[in-house]
Length: 129
Image 1 (spheres, helix red, strand yellow):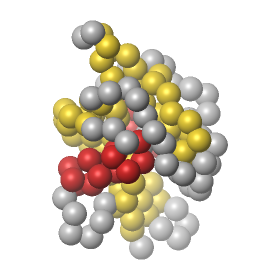
Image 2 (cartoon, helix red, strand yellow):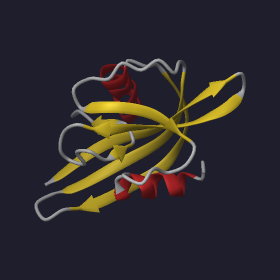
Image 3 (cartoon, rainbow, N blue to C red):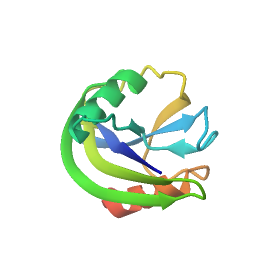
Image 4 (cartoon, rainbow, N blue to C red):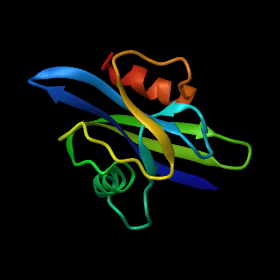
């Protein structure tokens, strides 16, 4: 079976200057202990853009301004296939309140060592680095 996700690359501007992209350190599977892009499952009947706003509010307590679609990415596991629709978005604030799914969140200007390879691919293909 397939799971369809929305993920987003979120960045914050301070006084008009780019301050990096947001990654969360996952506290649950999959990718436990890895730095990942925020995101989640798109609900049945939900528009992709609505899912991104819902996930950002629920998991990070942030409001987003959508910028552009980066693309979609596919990862095939032994028992399932994940499809991620990736978007570039700007956070309105850099104040983040995490839910149970992540233990930490940081803005990065380069890729950390403990990043999920799947999410690394999305960041590299986005052209933000």
